[in-house]
View (cartoon, one colour):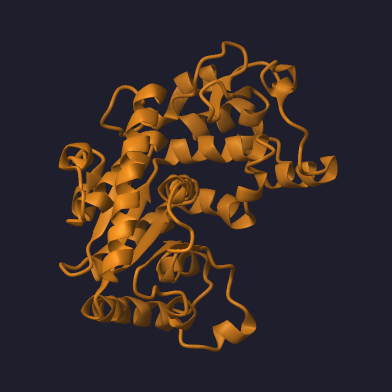
Length: 342
């Protein structure tokens, strides 16, 4: 390991002398909260290997924090004071997170509306595709989980594809996604989609410049064809701030049931924030159209983001039995067009 002053590492992660001072805390092994964790899923050797792959500033941070589960979701805290690490406040329009009680009530009411939407889709033979995109740890998976939680699984599918096989790489790029498009009465949710080519493939060098440029040129036509075929297409981009993303990565490394979410690609993305930003902006410029627009969900507060993503989807349809008072209007401080999120 390089001989770098730990205080300098903390400054890089949290910013300035104040951030470095806040990071001074006791080792995580002394945390009474973490002592109550479930047994780890990974072996000690596997955990050590994962830890070694982390950037040095995160390794330093991890020795000084603890995870609190009192709200049923992990919150990162300074181990010496028990104070929350409030990176979620970065560039966020609200001074406080939504409360658990308010979230649980609204979630249940909106989930009932989602069931009405599904029943309408089934009874009228509609087809709905939702694309969930965004940076790593932006909250896509958690939102999808709450959307489908009470839906009839026979009429709703979540598609989360692995990296393409050799056979799939030899096919037309969109071919493996087309195979999962819905039939009449079905909802299909893509947990990452064909936009992999505009994001991770572009930034990590998994596609050529020609393949990338062809994707940006063709994607709007492909999506227009879906809409002309009477498929409803909803495109959601989940936006998380840089510091909050790092906080969530630390939680993933520390929490045994979330370690599977932290991949080598995730770790590599920490040093490519600006590259991913440039790729995102180019993607919006090329593929945000009147027919198939993007919507950005500000997701530093994950619970609020889940509710507003549900509300946005419900607001798009005039389904049978819709309760307009419950659905309301999406919060324009959280749900914004791409040009207002830059």
